[in-house]
Length: 121
Image 1 (cartoon, rainbow, N blue to C red):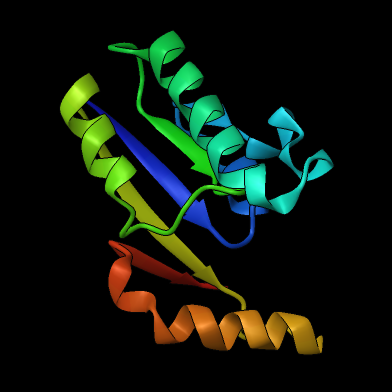
Image 2: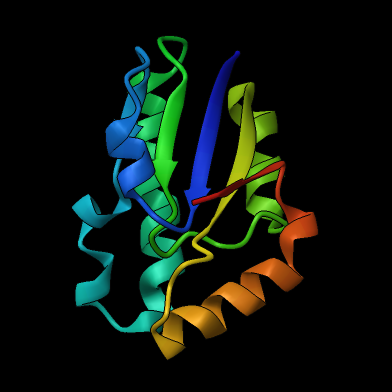
């Protein structure tokens, strides 16, 4: 069974990871070029494509892009269908000073119980 760690927050953490795992950046599916109402489906489809390509090979680390939150049913469905396990990691940047980032930080922090682990940077 492969483990898929989805990083919610700063994607540079993935790039720094030196483990022998498959790395998938949601930005590669160019979801942001579409209407925001389509982002979730585009990212889910891209996630599924990468799961199928990597199935039974290596663990994966993935940036969240437009993927749904950890409590979305799709993760359970995919775990059952592909015999994989999702692990959701929340990245909180406590030194960010930009107002939008602070708003995002407050929202993420208030919802941190949905994640398997939290990394403070």
